[in-house]
Image (cartoon, rainbow, N blue to C red):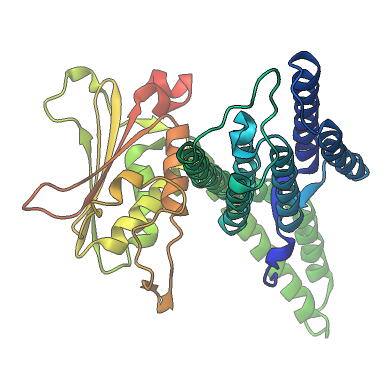
Length: 445
C-alpha cells in the first residue's frame, strides 16, 4: 500500500525537452523580429537591452540541456519555467511599446502550454501573473518603436480594449486548454484501467489451459507412485508397523489420480464450452454471480419475432473475456439499481445480434445520460453501500464496458423505459460477422 502522494513532487507530464525546444523557437523568433525591426525597418528602440533579455532565455536553455532530455518536469519547476517565459516576454514588451506592440498577444502562449500539462490551480496562478504583467504594461513601457515620423498616439480606450481582449484570451485559453488536457488525461488513465481488466480476464481464462497441462504432466509420475505403493503394500505384512502408512500412501495416490482425472475431463469439457459459446450460455455465465441477489433476473433468448426464415439458429461466438466482463458490469449496474426485476433479452436476425438489458429502477438521470461512457462519469450515489461497505462509484466500470464492447464491433445505446414503465434500458447490437469472430463459427450458423 502506498502512502499519500506529495503534490509538490507530482509529475506534470511535461517533458523538459519540449520546453527547451519551444524556448529555442521563441528565442529564434525574438532575435529575427528584433533584427528585422532594427535593420530593415530602421525603427529605434533599446536593442541592446532587448538582446540581453533574449540572451537570458538562451542561457536558461543551455543550463537546462545539462539534464536528460527525457526528464519529466515536476509541477513546481514546470510552473516556474512558464512563469519565467511570461516575465521574459513582459520585459521585451516593456522595452518595445507595451500593449501597443502587436506581439503582446504572445503572452498567452506560456499560459496555454501550462494549461495542457499543469493542474488548474497552478495554471490560474500563471494566468494571474500574465494578467498582472499586461496590466503593468498599460502605464509603464518605453515608446513604441517608430521611425521617420512621430510615433502614433493610441487613445486610452483602445489600450484598455486591448488589455480586455488579452485578459479574456488568457482566461479562455487557460480554461479551455486545461479542460481538454484533463479529458485527455482521464481518457488515458481509464484506457489503462480497461487494459488491466482485460489482461486479468485473459489470465483467468488461461488458467484452464494450465490446469490441463498440469494434469497431463503429473499423470505419469503419479502413476509410478501408485504402482510402487501398490507393490510395497503387497510386500509388507499386515502386522507390520509400516502397513498402515503404506496403505495410506496408496489411498492418497489413488485419490490424487481421481482428482487429476476429474480435472482433466472437466478441462476438456470446458475447452469446448469456452471455444464455442451460444449467446444464451454466455448470458447464463454472466448472470450466474447475481442469481443469489434479491432481484429477479429474467432471460429471454429467441429469434426476432416476425423476422425472415434465414435468421438461423442461436448465434454462437468464441469466448471473449472482454465481452463477458463488460456484460457482467452492465448486469451488475442493472441489479444494483433495479427495484424487483432485471430483464435480459437476446434476439437475432439474419444481419444482427441484439442484446437488451433493462431494469425497473429509477432510470438514467436526464442530465447525465449524454455523458455516460466518459471516464469518471457515474450515476452511482456517493454513499451507496454494498455488503455493508460504503462504495463510491468512479464511473470507470461503464467506460471500460463500453470501450471493450465497441472494440468487439458492438454499438451501444442508452435510454429510459417509456412511461408508464420505469427503468434504464441498455441496447447492444453486433453485426453477425463481428459476433462470430471466426469463419468456422460463421459457417455453422
